[in-house]
Image (cartoon, rainbow, N blue to C red; front, side):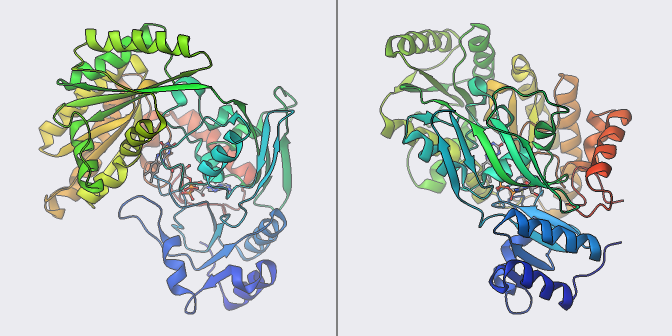
Length: 470
Ligand SMILES: Cc1cc2nc3c(=O)[nH]c(=O)nc-3n(C[C@H](O)[C@H](O)[C@H](O)COP(=O)(O)OP(=O)(O)OC[C@H]3O[C@@H](n4cnc5c(N)ncnc54)[C@H](O)[C@@H]3O)c2cc1C
């Protein structure tokens, strides 16, 4: 269906982006390796050529060439995705935005920051916090992933409970359409209803509609006080029930993360450090913030009390930055630790109405027991988003391979029966596209396909993501 990348195309790409920014075999084969995969274990496909763009104009020229030659283009940020979105399933060009990594402006009068897509998300946090401002979305991968990838996936993170996700902060975008046209959407505007909201349409579109080359983000004042609570439970279900109880009590913590014992023990082994309450069966990591120390203290007293009433063994209060960082380091390392534990594994990212978390977790445990496989759950319980990690451990591959789609489908059916959805923040990408019809009806999928065809009539942009290649 697509044409191969020829030496002439590579020469043309070198003229567009400069030879240093074009990686092709055989000379640059080693450098190309990392562009064949993201963070999904076992999924890879080799690009025929990698282009490191340094401007929107270059992205536009790459698209015009790709249209003429009918070669697929796969956009890429930092390659930390968890749905195979940046994997070039059909070969062709990987177009990486990693070199467009400048914070262009922090506008303190309008409370906005303008960035290029390759900026690492944690760098935005540090830059705006240095001037007393706050960009809340905080994917656990924040020191590795790029803001362009966050926009493309509508990334969330622990603080979504109180502050929302990436879509709640993007006010403007510059993007390049597959035709090579550069469009500017929105701006430094808190309100804007001028026509269809194309800004929001691009957010979460997983690099299938356009390539984002500039982003304007809304900021909020940096909260003055932050407190974290680590709450151990001897009973897995009691921890799950506490999440719903805290929310029902009309206190909105900044974050409520749920972790099973096995996930923290895996982190201990990875970091070679002992963590507090290591013999508990499950933990909640709860963050509260605000501007008045008294108000935050009152909230954490109430939350602590609710936890104790629901069977918490204790409540560890971390007010100083060092202890808080230690707790969050452990939380952020869980995915790496589980990979270390079982390099072959499978991760789901289901989301349910938050009051249904106890039923979701109980159902997942039942699926694990029935199939005799280790499933470890953790995640952003405060917003109903559970990461479900199925570990191969020492199961023979011949059993593992047919088991994964079976377990995935059962987890999806359970989630959907609870009013949930397939993915809360990691996206459909390549890994979940075959399951889309389980969650969305045919009419919705048809509208989505129609939108894709308007943006990308030739189907050259990120084929095989969200929908199978046709
Ligand atoms: C350890 C770990 C923890 C994680 N924790 C979280 C978490 O808490 N919350 C969360 O939401 N996610 C999390 N993730 C998933 C991942 O980090 C996010 O999806 C992130 O947004 C990916 O950004 P990236 O720059 O790595 O994107 P990539 O993997 O490079 O790309 C992701 C998708 O975005 C597209 N894309 C990238 N840049 C652009 C662009 N400029 N224009 C158009 N399309 C583009 C790609 O084509 C692809 O489809 C985690 C991942 C890991 C490995």
